[in-house]
Length: 415
Ligand SMILES: Cc1cc2nc3c(=O)[nH]c(=O)nc-3n(C[C@H](O)[C@H](O)[C@H](O)COP(=O)(O)OP(=O)(O)OC[C@H]3O[C@@H](n4cnc5c(N)ncnc54)[C@H](O)[C@@H]3O)c2cc1C
Image 1 (spheres, helix red, strand yellow):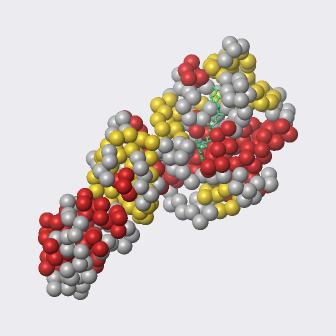
Image 2 (spheres, rainbow, N blue to C red):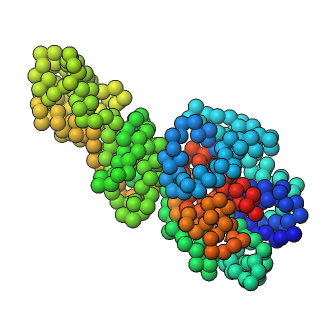
Image 3 (cartoon, rainbow, N blue to C red):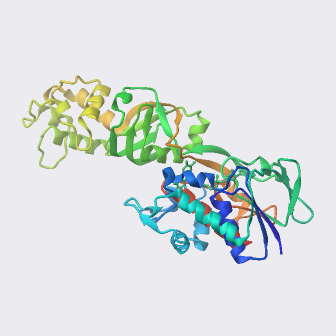
């Protein structure tokens, strides 16, 4: 029976080893892990709760949640879908619960249950797990492969599966495999101050973020922090623009559309805030500033829906308006400045910061380097890839682990 080496005992490596051994009980399957124990990352996923997958019910297209690698993921899902993943875990006794945003977690709310389930299966199936065993190099031999370990010893394998996660690619250097340079994804933005620090803790639903001069854009909830911005809309934008931001050394101009509305809609909304009525709802500067319906209310006291008083006062100051200015005093210029701030408020990104501890790597083994149907190297028969080592990464929400389970399953089936 063949000797199969799996390099990396993370989510993809362990899952692949289990599925492989189930299909080929006689195969000699060894998992080499550089760290002291397997599944170290899985143990801390989802803040220790492990967001194991997603129902995908709110996902319109895979490209939306997999900015890179969507085609490979789509193919892997044909073999092992999110629904299959759910059944797989439940069959192993890990009951899953769906949260209101479609994320799936173990009912136990414990990532360790996931870790222990995989560890038990590895033991039960007789898979050899070698921890503290880093593979330094993979070399192709006349038949099969030779792996050079950190202590300079070599082991042979007929087939090799690389599941080393993001970033660890030097072991492939002798194989001339097409690699997309790795860069981080899923991070928050440090902003030069602009007064946002005073708003720490403010959360705004339904903002639109974009990077000036690019097509990168995201929607969702924005959280203001003591270093800048975080929350789902920021993470989404960091993922979509991961490479662009890396190339610009994490310096860019962030545009915030606080209401996710077009200019005309913002004008209508401001008119409503100022209690200006209009038969057709179409508001002009003139309607807001000179209508007899305009009360002498202070602008600061009439924030649009969804904008807190504190944030509204900050936005007035961004528009260069006095805190005690009244709608009747606003004038066309003042109103235009306010509309500009609400539609495209401008901040300088001066760096990146972590989102809790979660991050993934964009880049890795290029999609063009593998056969999508099997995830086998096009150049090197018998060499396979699964998980984050591939140029696949996703938004937060269980999508990254889902791609690890599905690509690992596909490789096991291919082998
Ligand atoms: C803090 C945190 C929280 C996260 N939470 C979630 C979540 O809730 N849901 C979600 O979907 N995703 C989450 N992610 C992302 C997700 O964990 C990863 O996408 C996923 O674990 C990737 O699995 P993998 O097996 O491909 O790689 P990894 O889990 O990174 O495993 C790779 C393994 O290979 C080993 N290795 C590397 N090089 C070598 C070598 N040369 N020789 C031997 N061994 C080697 C490493 O030590 C490691 O154990 C989170 C990530 C982080 C960092």
